[in-house]
Image 1 (cartoon, rainbow, N blue to C red):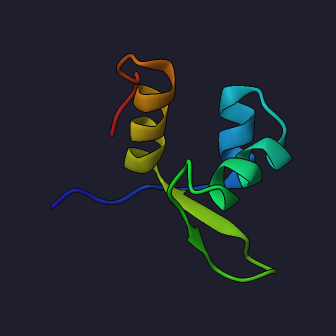
Image 2: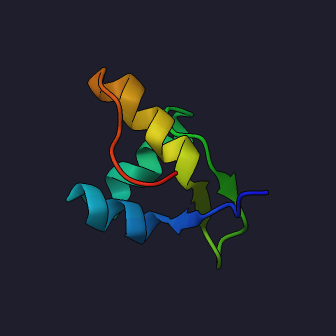
Length: 66
């Protein structure tokens, strides 16, 4: 069974070179699927969900493991 890799908002923002608020906006608008763990912990996004988001948004396969 494959291990699920969870990413933070900061991880995603750094990887995509965007602001953390941009990532949070995608999550709030349900454009990017994620789990909200509370005010203190914030959001977590499965790497596979990020890859699906990128494929949809940029209409091309995402690179990397996952």
